Amino acid sequence: MIELLLQTLCDLPPATPADGAYLFGQTTDNQISVFRAGLDLIQHQQTKQLLIADSVPRSGYPGFAAWYRALMDLGLKPDKISGVSTHSFPILHTLTEATALVRHAKATKMLVVFVVAAPFHQLRAFMTTISVALQEFPELRVYNRTGQPLPWSETVRHSQGTLECRRRELIHSELERIERYQAKGDLASTEQILAYLSRRDA
Image (cartoon, rainbow, N blue to C red; front, side, top):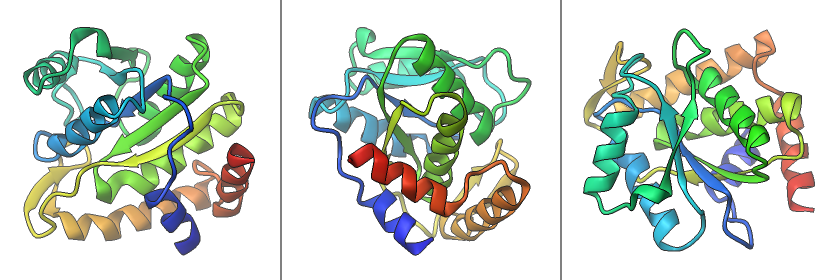
């Protein structure tokens, strides 16, 4: 797991701009982390567009309209923002967002995407997206871009807005979820994900 964590956090970008960079839904407490990382990808021409969940406010996510306005206020042009349909899912969480992203990529013929999440959530978001891709669209090349770090001792809301604790405490809950979801089969094994990354970079 340490090997995968280091590869994830230090992932090299693709040689050419990605087709899109998906910003995993965050509460308002953490959304600036993914906004800033996404804007940096656009400014350095590492992605063609930012992808965000096309949803009304729910599950702790402020909604497409709120994020669209916030990204515009930060200087992003309208043609650089696209929605990913999540309407078929009753709630938003990491697995449903990853599934929506992979299906959107397949339907729109995207071949290269970035995954962007808050740092404490990044490993699970990346692993979940790869897990779905392995099942539904193995040709998809998924790259990691960690959201901008925010103060680790600050108390914030996470996990559909129902969990409130310091950001550094969220690291432990995320690692526990990875272990639990791998045991359930919702996440690919660490070895499968490392093998995927080796094939992606071959």
